[in-house]
Length: 413
Image 1 (cartoon, rainbow, N blue to C red):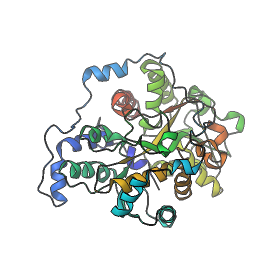
Image 2 (cartoon, one colour; image 1 turned 90 degrees about the vertical axis):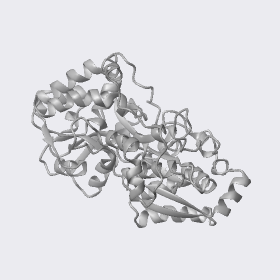
Image 3 (cartoon, rainbow, N blue to C red; image 1 turned 60 degrees about the vertical axis):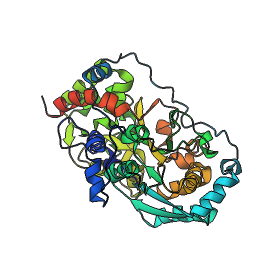
Image 4 (spheres, rainbow, N blue to C red; image 1 turned 30 degrees about the vertical axis):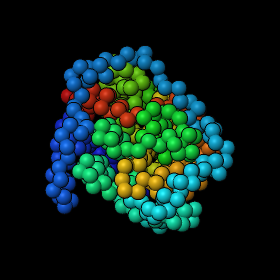
C-alpha cells in the first residue's frame, strides 16, 4: 500500500526535506548509484540538475500575500467524466495495441506493497490485455527517482512506468525522460489540478489530510471547525502534532500567506501541543488509546481502517485542507506501447476501480471520486469543502520558509 511516510519523512539533516535530498542526489550522485547498479556509464552534464531555491525565490515565497485566493476546488469531488463509457476510455489505436502485444511486457516500479490484493489488480489488467505481462517491483523513493533517471540518462532505461516521483519530476522532464499522456483516451477525463499543462504525469488517487480525534473524549459539538479552533484554550496540551509541516502547514502557507500562517502557528504552539515523533499511523492509534484528543495531520483512509477495527477515532478537515495527488508517469523505456496500454487502463474507470480494491484510497478518476462508495465513510467531512491540491513545485516554493518558522517553534526557540 502506498505509504506517504516514505515520501515525506523529514530528513535528519537540518533544513533539508527528504525530497530535497533526493533532488541533490539526482544531480550529484547519479553516476555513483548507476555504478553500484553495474554500469560504467555516467550521466551527461547539463541534463536537468536542479539547484536549491535562491534567496530571492525563498523570499518571494515567504512574502506571498495573505490575501492570495484559495484554489477553487470545492467541486473536486462532484465532477463528471468527459467520456461517458468505458469503451470510449479504452479506445486506443489498433496500432498501439498491436505494438504493445508485440512488446509483450512492461516494467512497473512503484511504492505499492506487493500483496495478494495488488495481485488481483494485476490480474484484472491481464484479463483485459492477456498479451501483456507486468513485471512489478516495489521500490523506495530513491530507487524510483535516482536510479530510474540515472539509468535513463545512461541510455539503459529499464523502467516503463513509475509512480510517486513528484518531488523529482522537474529533473525527469529536463532530461526528456517522460512520455506525454495526452494521446491516451482515458487521460482526457482528467483536468488540472490533477494533471498539468505538461501532460507528462497524471493523478491516479487523491490523498486527503485532515485531523483525527478521539470520539470518546471529543463531543460532536466540540470537533474543531476551523484551523483557529485548535488555538482555543480548551485544547491546551490535548493536541498531538507530527513533525510533518509539509502535509498541512505548507498548504496554509500557500493559501494564507506567510504572515497569517506564522501567526497561526505561533498561537498553536503556544497552546502546548504534544510534539510527537512516532510514525503517523502510530500517532492516530495513540489518539484512539486516549493519549491525546486530536492529532494533526491524519489521512482519511488510515483513520477508516481503525474505525473498522472498532477504535474510537473520527476524522475531519478544516478549510483549506491538503489534497496530495498520487502521481504516475510513463518513462521513455523499452516498452512504450505496453506502458501506454497499462497507463490508459489504469486511468480508466475499470482500472481505477481495480486499483481502489487493492489500495482503498480515493481514486482520481472523476466518476469514481464523485461516488460515496469511493469517497469513504468521512465523505461528509470534505465533499464541497475548500481543498488545496498540492502541485509539483509546492515543496520547493513554500517548504523552506515554512520549515524555518516550524523548526523554531518545534524546538521551542
